[in-house]
Picture: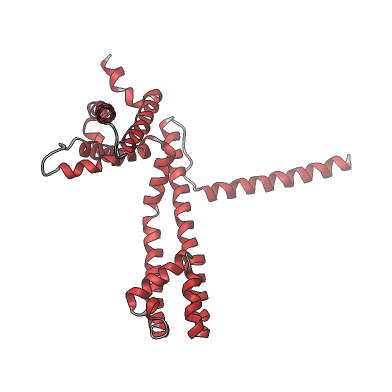
Length: 272
């Protein structure tokens, strides 16, 4: 009996129940933000919020008893533990300000849904690559900001008066939000300014950012492949060590051999 209770967090129906509880808790916390809510309704929503918190605590207690110290070896378990622990902070006293962070309970939806968890894993896996691209992007921004301040500072001090303003203006160029409203006044005073603006946009927005997105997508695919490999190993299936690119290359080679064999067989049939 005890073993079946401790295994509840691993059951699919219980996981769906937790997801439903998280969504309901999100709705309740949203309703509590409405001003002018009748006291009776407010009290009922608060009670429902406490019930949701009790369910989350019950789930964590079951996991702690079942997994013991290994519970804290999983980063997602630690995340759930911290999020729920913050919600248990007293509503009064010096730590009462942390009660505002109870909305982070909704982030548990990420740990409850595998596809969302895969996205977060991919984002963390992409941090080294994105840091390198971010470093390159920062250097480009710094050089461009100094150049823009020197080129256009006197002509248009509102946008390029000093280094900080130039950084902000160039970031506006990066987002492609209203950049013509900045470029055209500058070009009225410095006609050749387009020779600076267009290469900057091409190098940052269309090149560097696309490279950044490519790194993130690649990291997410690797995270999905690793998760699939772990699932296969958990089921006792030998998981392939090769990457997706290697497996695709092997499949293409096998198809090419099969195509040659079919051609050879057709030639023999024609001779007959």
